[in-house]
Image (tube, rainbow, N blue to C red; front, side, top):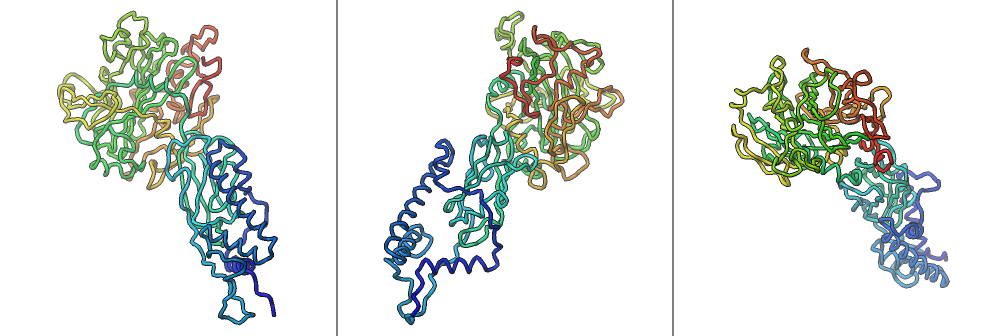
Length: 585
């Protein structure tokens, strides 16, 4: 009489049969997986060290039980395996020896296969969670499944972890029990979206494939930006927003919380019009460039523009590092191919004025009036003048949302920023100022209804979403690749969004990294520079506007720390952080 198969042998036979039934075999090759014990001992500081140690302990206990049982023969080994499976919830409750592996009602030489149900194989949870933001750059990744994972199926060609530009992030995958972990070889990309795809070749120990699962999360921005945040608040504008329709109220780009610009115009009717102004900072050895962005869910059809969804304009305040004082202002707005960038200088800036690429030179107290003239730091000759809060008087037009200066009469011929005493007497507007919280403003009045806006950093809010296009994203496409001026630093080498979502497709708003100075009007002369220069390389833009090498400002002298520098100490959009170098101290 043949000896009945042990439970272990029966289970092995069934699994072998299941694996041969249509499931694509995995290549016989060395895997990326390591033992749980190796993971647990790798680093106590690793985010999943405790979990890995627990897995290693359980694995060790199970191995020990099997080793000890093996001294008593095959039946005892089968019992130990049954006990381990039953205790783990993955199989039948164990019985002593080989009990239960043979059907007592069947003939003595007939063996009944063990009853092993096919378990569903799905993702249960992930670390980081899908859609999570502000994830530390030294984080590891982990995925928990509904049942045990086949280790050789959790490798780099079955699981994709990618950063900006669809670039694979190198690291090590490890499968243990129902967990798969991934330890990157280095820090994750800063202020970026990370995409994970768990493919169908990931399998359970029973050979059940996983349905393709896509996840993503966002990493944290650069560290130690408190100084820039303080400067952004110190020189944030006071904004006179002319209001003709509800579409003229300032808002956050993600005011509805979904980072989908396609539904913003419709959602604006259901959400309060709480104002937000984006800001970011770039620093050279001589100046800090503070860029501010203004967003509206819609632009109405006011000549010379046309109506479209998701409108943006902005401004840039230039602060001299040595004095801590604002020295220049640029504003940015567009209508179709007409991309305007207006420049004003302070009389105290020391910049040469032989160039023709600026509108006016004004006293600092006029271009950047103190927020509170009674404060001691804002008094003439104050020793701590660098502490004075100054706010340029912004004027944002109704309908076409041109970014203007309240004390500039604009260009009547081109219908740009036109402002005179009569118009001022007729306008209804809201006067926004930076505050701790934003609330929906009251009805606009000719006296200016006061309201607050909040400041939000573009480098941690907008920039991580730079590659999100399509019907559930911010942008119409991601075809824009920054092409720097000759001899200037390179930016991202992959495509990013340059046109906000807009179903009309007749015009569109551009994010700050896609602004350009190239007017389409005959009344303005300009120095043509590539798209994106105002944010990627603002020092080069200002240098050219001031006359460049011909009549522009003198070059930076590191010995005296005077002059104009185009070398960056901090430029997150070019990937430059030299703040700790002696040249930038």
